[in-house]
Length: 166
Image (cartoon, rainbow, N blue to C red; front, side, top):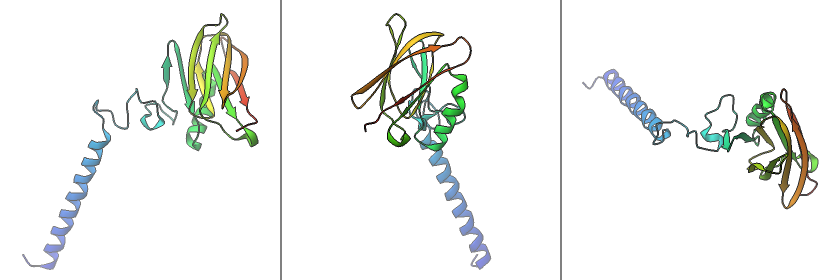
């Protein structure tokens, strides 16, 4: 039993078992109470993302689905590449084309009824709206802008908002 080769194998086996045990323990901590790894479908951060291709979590407000973000490069690319499958795409920038986050967004239908009232988590926001005419009001640091947008039955509408102040 004092053979150095036997001792070496035994130490290796103990280290491997400990590493395997730590791996299982870490996986258990990554699961929440619902058994969902990495977050849940109610988690509104990109860390809890249940969507494919790096899109931030899709949120729901009434009949309207939306997602926003794009602070990181992967998320930004994912949002830009998904624009073609969302009826409305919004972009928020400041001086020097700096991307802005925490932009308050309010969308009203042609009759003045609110359909979305939220805050964008980054420079890109994608919104699923029924075809029609809408007013999009975007506010950044007490500076508001408003644009009338027509969402077509086929295709997409885009609007860019730019602020000179930060």
